[in-house]
Length: 305
Image (tube, rainbow, N blue to C red; front, side, top):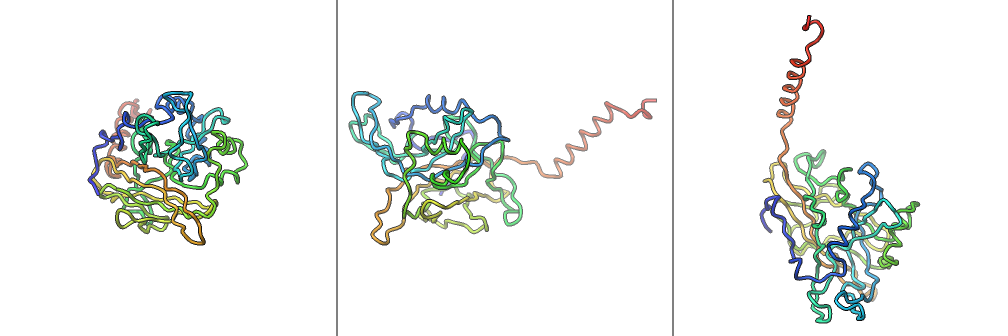
């Protein structure tokens, strides 16, 4: 457990220069440069997915004449769906995939990559803001899906769930990267394993029940290729200002009926922030001052006469 960090000091868990990835930062920026038209048009399928990496080999970025094995091959992978204006270019971003450290020929492997955070670090976006909750979360600041942010829909589904959506953009996403992510989860039972979390940050289900009590706990989010899971991250409404982070990996916990579990995913991080929110009484005071200023500047006709 750790204390919240100032919003201005979110750091990569792994030094960028230390990890060789097959997708450069500049390529990622280019992919992000063509966003969907506007937040009000965020498609229903823009959330997170659980996939299995089907790409077995890569061209060595240091020497295109050489091929190297993909260290993330056949592993569970946490994916972010990235729709763009030209929906035929919709694609996934692998978050925290296994990757090489340095020269791939040295075969030194890391259990994460430089693109291992949500929001993705290269975008320069701040952490997801926790907002005042209602009902069972009335005394908390919670994660909410908001139209103004592409990263706030925390729903997680299997990639195969895209086949149920009658939308050309969803099908382009499913078929992206040459079908790399179309492998089925099959008999897998997928769990989130908590690896680290900032003091004061909690994770709950839709009923408000906490999912983790200690580091190393695993929570099953679904089995097979037809499930949907949406966690709620929260703090007390009086939590200190700053950044709150949870670190996870995906694990196939099914070891029954001779099932060989899928290899675990790499490590990934979800970043949230607690910002200063004016009290309702303060907002009311600002409103009254604004109205008084308006009427002084724009008196009614009777006052002007």
